Amino acid sequence: METVEDVTRMRLVGGNLALDFVNTRTGPPVGSPDDDVLTGYPELVAWSGYSGVLTEAEAAALRRLSRGDPGGTRAAFERALRTRDDLDEVFRALAAGRSPSAQVLARLRDDEADALGHARLERGSTFGWDWRDDRTLARPLRPVVHAAVQLLTTGSLDRIKGCGGCRFVFVDESKNRSRRWCSMDDCGTAEKIRRYVATRRTRATR
Ligand SMILES: [Zn+2]
Image 1 (cartoon, helix red, strand yellow):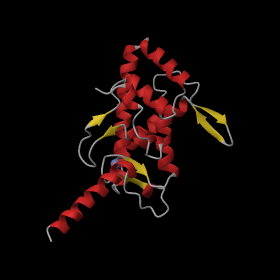
Image 2: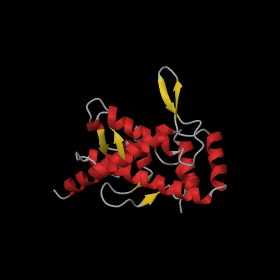
Image 3: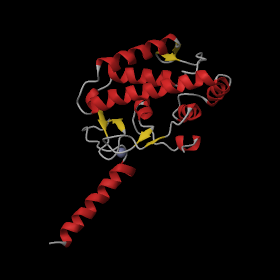
Image 4: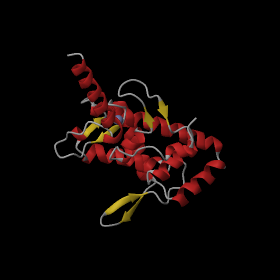
């Protein structure tokens, strides 16, 4: 059973909020995920605080709101998982050089329209969307959905990749686009050890 603490041990290596959200499920590069840190709405709120989507005050307000509305909370959590499935499909397809389906793109458009309907334009160095006034249980998902659409509309699609050692997806920001692993500390090191052992075995049998 995952806990709120497990959520805050997730590695944020996607280089984009939407990809980090997809990476809340772990497992092998292909096939079904074998673990998921998002086991309930409290974990979703915890992940949102951890990844910088919500301030501590916003997270506390959402926890209060959800305690008073179990039905709405269940629906919001199911919707979050559905959105994650959609984002997973979109970015995994792009990482594999395929196009996402029209249905999943239409749902993403609807989610983005809903997100912007709850946003306000906030002035920084430029204007940007802000969800501080959004007092709905869908609040954690708004910036995630918007980050996904931003990446699709303004990012380099050929930089979206899947890790060679696990199911994580990431934006390859390296100069020569040579990144193959979610992180060198995990999958990169595991691969180096695997190669080292294989080389030694070859030498030993010579
Ligand atoms: Zn990996």
